[in-house]
Image (cartoon, rainbow, N blue to C red):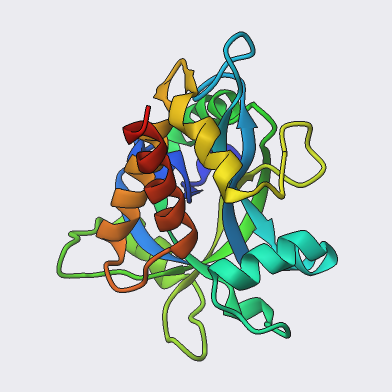
Length: 234
């Protein structure tokens, strides 16, 4: 079976959470370990523009990069409530994986390569699926795909190796680490082809709360509160 013949799994942790890719047949929530999510990727197209100002969108920062950079490590320790000697698995965040049937896989790859072109590159990372079988009626192709996945020995959950788009620290659009107050000021007024930057943050925050209403993302919550405060004072 060639790559073109295989179904595609795409992992969403930012705009893909509230604006799914085309032809997505199933959406499965779950947890990404070993990464932190930050609004440290500048946007010159979807949520900002060169003429009026670059916006901010999210990217994932891996554990190994976090511990190499003191400013990033201190930021993550604060917002994730971690001790100085935190480990990889202490980092976790919610996202969702989309299942694209094989007949649409290449078309969706091409679509995402354009949508995520502003500094993002393709990676493959583990994703722990949290499947509520009561909410899903799976077809045979999908069920076979799930059954073939290994399970985490501790949680018992299926673990998927999924395609994901990440803006790494060495890409030209990465601007972190950035103080939350500065990020909030930019998001409060930036606007791009896909709409206001504030809308991106607000939709991401609300959709993540729908995925998991027990664990609050302190970074996103404080960032949203600060942006709302700035907008209300204008």
